[in-house]
Every structure is written in C-alpha cells, then in structure tokens.
Length: 171
Picture 1 (cartoon, rainbow, N blue to C red):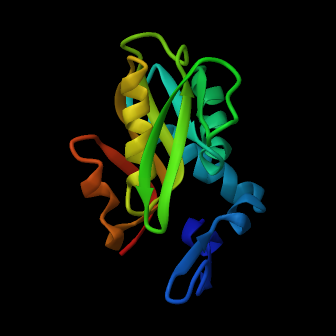
Picture 2: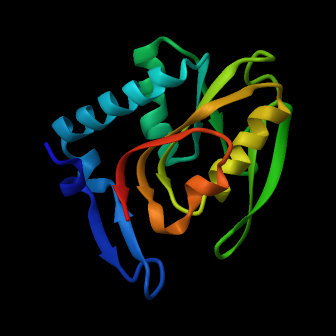
Picture 3: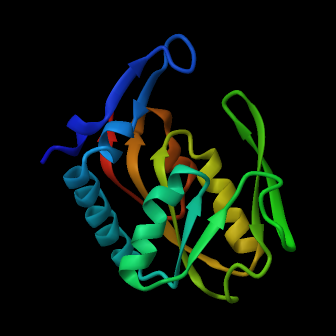
C-alpha cells in the first residue's frame, strides 16, 4: 500500500502558496493507518526508547498506539494551559509567530530515553522545542519519528545532532 496516496494535498492552506499535507484520509483508512503505525513502531524500536513523547495534538494520534504496542509510557507535550500539575514550559518561534509548549515536571524518570513523535516534520521548530522540554525534565532525546517529512523546509538539519526518521518524505 502506498501511504503517500492517503495524504491529501490542499493548496493554499493555511495561506496562499502553501501545500498542506492532510493526514485525514490516512486516518480514515483502517488498513493505511495500521500500516503507518506499524512503520512508526519499527522506527521507534530502532531508537530503543524508555518512553514515547507525543506533541499535541496529532503527535498523540501516532504516539499513543506506538507506546501501547511497545509497552512504554506515553508522555504528552501540550499547548499552554492544558497541564494541571507542576510543569516546565518553553517558548519558541513558528513561521508565523511565537508559541509555547509544556510538559509535566515529573513526566519521566531522570535519564529516560524519550522518542519524540509527531505527524509532520516541517521547519523543525516545534520538534526542537519538545526536545528541549525533554532535556529540561532530565530525559535524554533518543530521537524523533514522524509520519511525514517536508525535506525542502530543512527541519532535519535543525534537529541535528538528534536522529530523525520519517515514513513519508516530500522533496
């Protein structure tokens, strides 16, 4: 099965000149979704993580089943105001402004190897912010796993020296 065929291209969204890679058709195809998760589980195994970190919100879609299949804890990285207990926060730059991510201070054991999961690697800013949060709470970034990567936006270079892997790549 060609997973790329299940990614819808939406031109001029969220603004003119951008081609949005929509995972909704992939999510709506049980066989395709199973194949994507199976592939991401294999990517995760290569990193030998102690926990799976998912970036809100689409990182949860892939991260939770990966954690479940590997018998590992799932750690959510959330948008501001969503975590109820003591947390660490980081502000970072997006293409169109500033944002913030949060993680619970007790999200993982010190020295735990965390695999960070998200649906898409574009410029790498959000993923890098998640990596910094993992390190702020004492974890070690084992690497990254993405369903989709947009090579032309240079996200992989921004994540150096970490290892990033993805199932589907667009050049």
